[in-house]
Image (tube, rainbow, N blue to C red; front, side, top):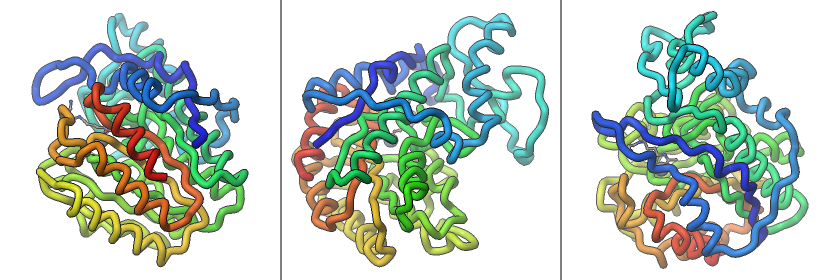
Length: 334
Ligand code: Q9C
Ligand code: ZN
């Protein structure tokens, strides 16, 4: 399988994140890339397809903010990574704000996603990897893997969160739409609900979003991913959420994925994007499912059996020592 990755993706490396009331080491590290690269073998550097396919998903003001935030942070006399602490819960609306802290909160939904001087460069390269894998599939590959990092599925059109800045799955799906694929489906099997992807396509009938994830009653991102969220307007019925309890093992996960695949089959997509997270693994340090390494091959072959041209993008997975094996198992299932 063709695999796309750019060394620039490793430059984003925040020192710490706010976790359960204290600062902890940042879990979404460049070492995750090393672990996967070591396991999967040679990769291709993506071509640079520019900002247009990113701006097809993300607001221009948000992109300008990602580029400006490190400078504004420095000008405010701060050291370290930019982290928000106040959020516009009273109602988000386009305000012209004059302080970096105000901008940070306006473009984030949590305090766990620092912005560094290298964030834009890294996230941009991650998006280019997703676009290259999409082009490979549009050109006839049965499946391709974008070794994305930073991940993407928590990022919305104008906000970051959950270690994500640019929504690589949404950028891939939109690129396929713009290349003429009429219906695109996204299957999200990261441990966490992909709130950003859901938000981006919530009112659209041309992109189906299905997610299997930890029940947000107990798990991040809490405010999205409940079973009663099914889309709105022209997108009513093209969002499917399948929350599962802590301790979920292969059979229950596989059954939920089969339910998602059935709904996707009824939608009849021309292309599938898989948001793949290995944070469903039994030893993941921040998650509570119990999939094993061989389980990933089973889940992948269930997906592959549907025969849709498939773009796989990397999302979460924080057990660095097992990450390479888990990704390799998943790719082998194709
Ligand atoms: N320090 C993805 O898997 N923080 N994002 C939870 C852990 C947010 C996960 C606390 C987890 C986000 C792409
Ligand atoms: Zn995750």
